[in-house]
Image 1: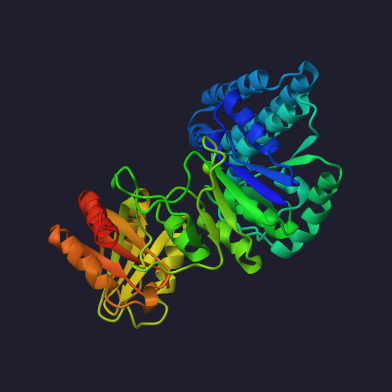
Image 2: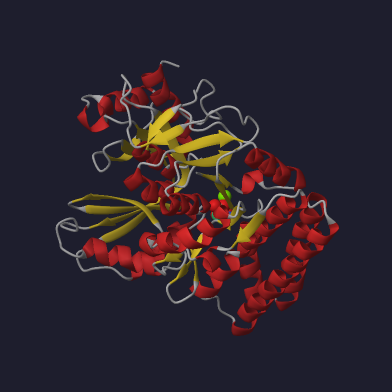
Length: 456
Ligand code: ASP
Ligand code: MG
């Protein structure tokens, strides 16, 4: 059995929903389809929350806009009037609920984690019904299944939940299994699950991939296909390095590291549920469906020159927490980290030394993080400093931890380009090491590292 996942970039209009259907129907095996929201909808919902907080009159306008978008796609895509009116009715019902939730925010003048997660889940909740309608209009048995209705159970952490695999597995075997037995194509919402006490909890942005992994684990599927508009991972971003090449095989750990570094192919968490069972992931290109893209599996292999890819993330900020002994005083790190995470800020990475703890965060979180930590820190801290507009480079390859001289090669390659390295982290991962450089140097640095390992 296959789990087949399509993200928002493949769900833009009626034609693209039909492309998804056509791809599904090529497949003879049993399959479960996992869908994200239509492109841009999750972002719109985020904006809706912010707007609803300030302006009651805007709520109606937002609801109209989102409703219209889905009505148009449904109407163009579902070629059966009766089925179409059923789906339009479902869309309308959902939009009514969403509207009430947004007014709720407006009246109470606050957004709780609970209501935020609920609201942001609506993109997926709408998308799957349109897909069901398309299948049914062509005489194919299909059913939209929302994660909470089928029992994808989470640990309850809003915004960043983890699936309870044991319970979920038990539930999905029944709920999805039953549909598969009846020859139905289940279309499942990505991105969220339900806590034990019944609340919608998100898996984090891009989390539909993780849903696909959870379902694959639960149903012991033999592969997860993640469909994109590219063939898969590359040795570098081709926008920076025009000679970058396609990578046909990666280990879970390599893929997770690359995903983490902004190679926007996969969500790193998809690997968690798949690893224990060794279920492979295959990246497929919706515009090139016959080609097998990057295959990601348990068994990695070591390239002769070790490094497989250089990835990067721009718009990084660093908070340096300095003081003699911050590194050895117990509790400083955990105190600072929990202060930050209590405010919903994600620390991307931590680099520590005896006299300095460095939090790597997104640029957009830097100011808030800085303010928080300046106000509230431990007595061991002498100074809190922020560094703006940095970039994080990840250099990834199985075998890194047992190969001599790699870091030296990276450093001399970029030193020749007169790029200064602000910080490094080596050894924390067996398959990756990180560098931090000024954002303006990113292109030079990535090109130089790529050239060093791939000669182009
Ligand atoms: N729709 C969600 C997002 O935009 C989940 C996903 O696309 O995977 O992050
Ligand atoms: Mg997505």
